Length: 368
Ligand code: GLA
Image (cartoon, rainbow, N blue to C red; front, top):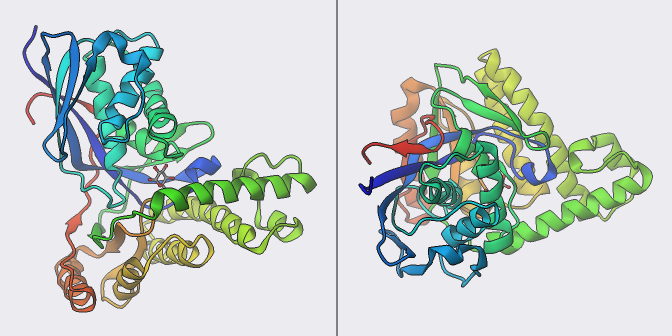
């Protein structure tokens, strides 16, 4: 009854559809085998205790008072925010010790925060039944309302619903998803620039605001446009808006189109087309959405010149983190050494490089 249990939630790599989620559009992530694990043990003092192998400082609070938690600007806010959301939904939070261990690198665009939130939700639920979609939604709310990062639903959704054989295409308005099986003769390789996206949070907020301004401007002339999901390139040409806002909106509108085109190309195993869409997506993030940085631009430009690489783009929120590359399996080894050497030569950084293999969404695990 009181024996330790372990809950796992994966990080993710987003293949295409960047910053489209909070515009109610489409995204295509895969859940990764890199994950956050939380080991639970009963606590005898009525409190929840949270500690992490990766982060300094522990936190404790009376389990029965989880509904009244407030953020304190500490990493444990991700867990406390989830506890508050669960308690607000009537879940009885049992006193537990939560020991966290994660192999999702932080600040790398692989969504370590959603992995933490979703594993925390499962650990705190401790086997109580709860609708899976609601878990994703309340974890997103914990991040936006409690931690204060106004993110979309992609990361929490894929941490819950990830599939071990496929990417998932999420419609971020209806919250329906389909699995998309990727061509077999393809490796997905992530290269970590090791640039942490410190600029990210404030720039992310600005992008969210700019998209809202774009919708405001467009809907004055086209009242049916309720989000950038509804907008087309023709709307952008006709509606009046500041130039920079138009460029932000153009990224979102074109990126939504690219998700559909990419899924079609994947279904036909058209690797060249998939690769081209990756490069287009990166260009759009670089010039229109302006969320890249020199290091990731260099990684993408370099990848473009390496034989066997079909396409490359930055993945995740932006301003650093990882690039994701589509590579022919027989060229994977030479790709790794070429890109590692060029990056090292240019920035004196040895970039971690790893193969992305789809993994299942969050669950309890027997051994971790
Ligand atoms: C972060 C957010 C997501 C999404 C991506 C960009 O990971 O948490 O909701 O907006 O950035 O695609």
